[in-house]
Image (cartoon, rainbow, N blue to C red; front, side):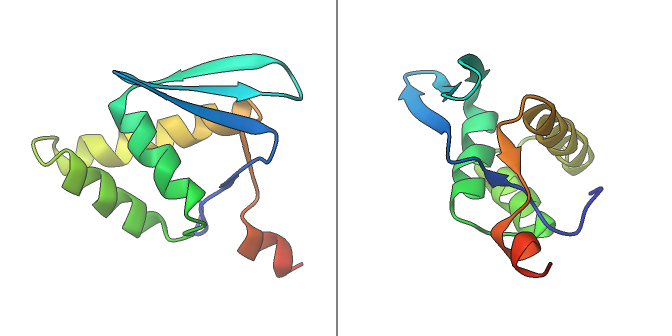
Length: 99
């Protein structure tokens, strides 16, 4: 993955589970962001405060074992970039504490 530490969900983001995914709502920007089941798995993992990228990749691969590992890695990286660009995640607590 691009970074050695995963980002953390921003406190201004509300997560709402739906039947076929979830919606994120940012109270700062009033923007909505839809999640499919893979996105839900990633978001829930980020909510735990875990910071190890390989652990996230393993969690996604375990939840979706039929997905090729190479696809999982690329898709997770792309999704994390989308979350960053949308302002839904920021530096992890561990990353902020080390400054």
